[in-house]
Image (cartoon, helix red, strand yellow):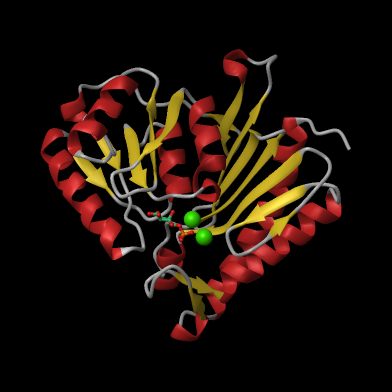
Length: 273
Ligand code: IPD
Ligand code: CA
Ligand code: CA
């Protein structure tokens, strides 16, 4: 089955919209501690019934439409395929926000072809914003990145001291101690630091010019595959570096001034030297 990035993005958007509706329906019906189905890497790393239902729906819809594709999902799916396409799914990015009734959570679906991410959708369920990106060599900039159909562009240049950055914290207490120390060193050097609680949305905020950059250690491919593509197509760069806590560090920011952002992350102690 052929795979045009734009078609993969269209399918991902349709499926993400259905998954977001399901997640919002869970939210409307519940809110109690019985939502928590399990814990994962630590006691504060929870999975809700809605995470599982969303991943089930996304897997079923994508693989019914494209049965030969592979799929990797945060909640356990690892389906082998033969088409060269692999879907990468975070059924709710920002589960803790979702659990507490905070609005920053999203459904994130990316598609790789032969190991390269070529399409991505991040659906901001509560705000009904659809971020979509796909590569297309025929388009200026090598592809399109949009929010509700409107093209996105990163923020203009700013000195490091005036940049608004975002970060996030791991579910591991040990790694958090390292992240907290690096964040404390970075804070006096920039305009301010936000922690919204959904990596996929933080990357979309970089894409739409609502942040000057994002730095976080310990995120996984399902957190940043779709949002990272959208940010890059809107004029950002994204690198994965060895993090000070022993796992991958993602740094994303506009092309202009990107080297300064990486240097700031290093100087603050986010990287392992
Ligand atoms: C988490 C969110 C959060 C980030 C964590 C991620 P989850 O994903 O993206 O912003 O700080 O590192 O694990 O668990 O809500 O899917
Ligand atoms: Ca996530
Ligand atoms: Ca998740």
